[in-house]
Image (tube, rainbow, N blue to C red; front, top):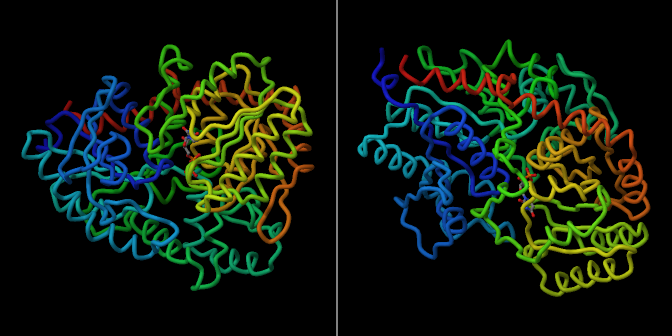
Length: 492
Ligand code: UDP
């Protein structure tokens, strides 16, 4: 038996410094510890580590154990941007180059430190576009690597087939300029251009996200069975999805990629009282202590519209005005996440706050704005009736697992694919947007909110909630898959 198999399984999960990566990484870590009995170290960039643990200065070899006895350790690595990545001035392509060189060096340091401290890593896991982690891990004797795929498997299947013979079909549909133009990809139902990951529709090298496509291409090469050097162990894909939700996409990938459905990976589903214990104090944003849970408690069942566009999307003043008008006219109570950094312009931010406040005054049952909330707690609250979301994958899985109907307002990346899934499952509708800047107008938002707050949508959402929970409950397909995966790394 190889030496690495004789130790307790120890997973190192390496992430980007963004909430949409850190949150699922933390959920996976807790599931591996509590469900699988493994040891886990989550490795985050210095900039994220500093925010999560409220530290001014962070040494690259900083390590902490999670607050609240979660049993997960955290280590910092430098991505070359220890002060954080600023979208207003920093360049994405340069960041990718930096994280590749600086990150490779500093993650190597973490691996060495863990090995020298008697806790060698047995499997290195990374979230999406960090394929260099696999090379560093192999150079340091780590036998296995896995990608934690934190987008829908349908998006991975679309990327796979794009790079394996279907690029021309996708490019032709995208170039038609019609977002409803259909594309046929093996094993998937017909998808319109607007349902595909937006990066696949990039046809110009001048697009600021043009670099993303080549990164995904390189990732697909790594993931394809037999794609690496001969004798190399495979890179597994832990997909944050469950069979019932994306059966066709999983089936279309299985002949080519070692994909294991382990989702929805949401550790709060395993807490005895999820509404009390879902709290995630170590987020990259400061939690709003504004009593929103108490406020929700004063509202009737399924009456509140929850609005959030995630951790990085920004909303124009125009868009905020349309949503505010819709809420004021609908007379429905609303809880709205407007982050401090929603808008760089201080004047616009003040105007935005005023718009939200006046919508709360004009509406029938009032509204509340918060900087950042515990979204799992909000979605688990019985007063919440629907979720107006940008459809980040984490938000999508959370709302499905909580049985909350969706108004989907996707912006980019996989969000259009997530909106398509939501519609296919019958748990929500995708809002139409107008104009070049894609503004969701008040009348359309009201129409969508009315459509999803029907009994029919609520009962489908309730049925999918059960499906999602059954997948990760004891004996569920995803739970079995995860445990089986961990067992590969434990001595028999
Ligand atoms: N989130 C939160 N509080 C908020 C807004 C968002 O906890 O006020 C969490 C949300 O629960 C989700 C994550 O932030 O887990 C956002 O990830 P997602 O993939 O939905 O979108 P992204 O931020 O990556 O665009």
